[in-house]
Length: 174
Image (cartoon, rainbow, N blue to C red; front, side, top):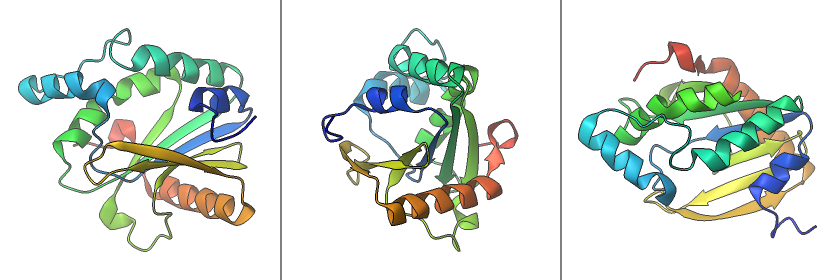
């Protein structure tokens, strides 16, 4: 199977032990959540209905992986004060947690001395990295996969360093 043509859902379905995600952007402009985000900006209330938006596609992937014994961790490096998007993301993280992900937040000022890759990434089973590329406005620009041992080691070390310093979701306030 060609990794370029492989969907993230296929990669996660093949994952057996761990899936970690490091997010480093303060703004994403992902189209599938634009309506919910606009409503959040208008009302200050996030839509946490798991049957709406992009959740019906994401939540089963997570719950199935966790049921197979995959440990899913997500760390977010954020600027403070946080952007409106990060406030929104924080509000909807309850669904990630309910599906079985563990989520932590690291203020960017506490990451200054860490060696971090230049892009958000997923590291699957400690062997495959999927880098996610975004435009300056936060729009999706594509993905890139690698199993290069040096890149995998960099990403693993970066994630663990962030994870150790990060604040569990339940204790992080925006």
